[in-house]
Length: 302
Length: 269
Image (cartoon, rainbow over all chains, first blue to last red; front, side):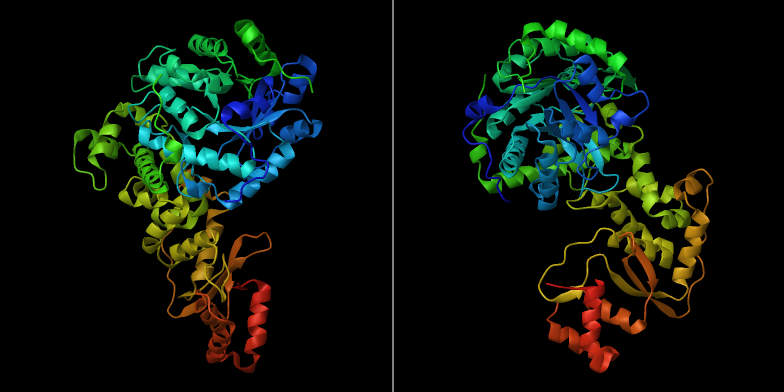
């Protein structure tokens, strides 16, 4: 696999100093801004000062939508959230996918890459194959995923932050945070912690919202995701639906506040509310600022 | 905090073996999310071919209700196949596709490089007769494998074969019955087709990209289809010319091969 000559040099503790502080941002997925009543990230930034950066989540086969292109054209900060790569499968980092990624990042110029470290698809990338399952929580699963993270970082010249995925069925005895902590160290990388996803895991295992956070290397946490969720059930099994609505569960806030206060390298926080109106989303931004206070990263001046 | 072993320096073979185990477990997990019978088997202790005891213990530790949370996943798989293989769906019924997805054959779709639609078409085409076989070949042509080896060979996304006489017309008629929204015709209108009578005799068919880059099927000359069918493996130009002459191209063999290369039916590497 060709290596990008701009691949960041040095260990994580050296590289992290070169990463920009992006502040409080908003996420988007392909076509989200065009949905009826959905927020326009550009308007959220210009009219309300609520989007320091945009996290763009698209499958490479779809490319950037008009909202993402308009944002990129302004030269405003972005991150790119992949939706279609199984990091623990070397065959998934094929040259076709990588060349598509390079073309997209040339347009978007993201500060880093990030995305759920789980199973995004089975078989080849093909119609109907997309899903998202959490990683197998066994020590043996760490090395293959770490190898994929290192390979992707070398191939793109960008930091790659693995994110804890959502799920209902978590296989393996490890705690999710032990898995991701060890993954970050094995790949010598930073982390994106999705607070809503983490609460899904804790609740599924019957654990306290903050369980095992004392074992996570919090100095590797670069980015947080905060999103609304909805308690639900399936055949009597209590679950949380990761609906990206405007009702953020108290435990999600509790996790976000706990990490933000203890993560010295936190550089970005995303409110995932892409399919809600600006009016509905604005209180979330206000609450986030109030809850995280001085621990909320402040965007660097352009 | 406990520190992990330095896994970045784990030998490649160990990492590869670990990755293979993880991917195999993921394949079991995907099946569990759509197959309640497999969930029951895993939790009941019944023998399951290919599932190691250690991995089974990991799967059994999960609340069995958690596997079925996405209650629409299996239906989405069925509709994905129906969208691409509506003729097979009309001939066998959506329930045949659903049954295949719930059976052991579905593992072929989950294998590395596997394709849901192609694996379904390969499994179900024999029961759907010549029309199913034509739809399977179209499905395969949409997923061209990069050619391997050096020489001249059939281009990726091209296919040439013989089918019972009348197959293409019957296929076109079936597609016309399915209309512009085949999925709705199959699901909401419940269209089912009987296998048409085709043959006796055979017709030469050619699959190649149409103006939109999508595989289309048309009649070809028997000599051309024989030549293309015989060119699946790369061969030196001299061998291809010799083959063309034997199949009747005579002194025009070189021009014919150049024309086929120019049209993209053959490729040279």
